[in-house]
Length: 300
Ligand code: CA
Ligand code: ZN
Image (cartoon, rainbow, N blue to C red; front, side, top):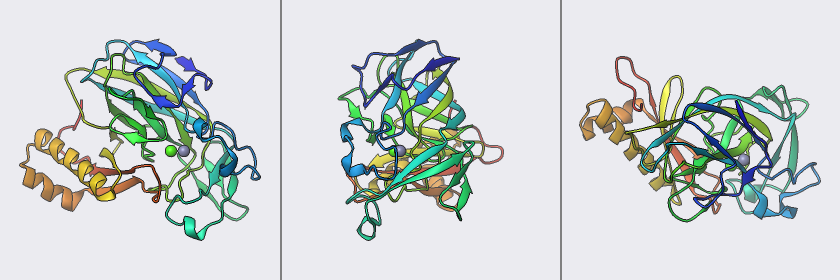
């Protein structure tokens, strides 16, 4: 398995980034990742207000995948995710759903064996570490890793865990894939603006799919399919995620647009990846369609 250390990282998805690794389609890569603050927060006395925000959300990479061309799909199977023994939660001034009711504070959370978070002496809960930032370089201008978009980026989708498959549009030759911003845990919507931010290691298998195109990131888990869309306005993010799913159901499950809509209304779910408004970061929504018996796969 190829290995990329956390020092080989970038703060933007860009077609101009120099690849740190070149692989063939189907190869495995382990990414070592920094936490989203680039380790600038080491204790509860380090506040977000005192860190350098030009150094947040590093993505390890980029990886050049041979044969990947614009219009293809990059299939990224997520293997084992292991994380450091402690993570950081923070409130952020003027960001998040309840910031007006919060002080600006850093909380260090012990994480046991990548599987249990100890919020305090009384409260602990099981965790399934997830990837916050994952994407390919966009065709146009560079996009900072703190932002989500059609290329992926900071989509903060907590279903991207061990065993998930992430499908991304390839926009430039070689794809220039990267990932980072692992969270030991993050709730749907990430209402406060952070998960349990944590350094870690992520195992992946990266494959180019030819003859398929998708407009935006798409995720598969053992029991569900997810479209993922981001927009400044919540309702627009939801609508784009729904339209993408409707298009897939029309094409793959042989439904009329109206029948797909009816089925989605009764059997699918609108879910939020990220809605920590007020925030300069777009809202990210996803639409979940369960895998249904006797119906074909929606991708590959
Ligand atoms: Ca994030
Ligand atoms: Zn994060």
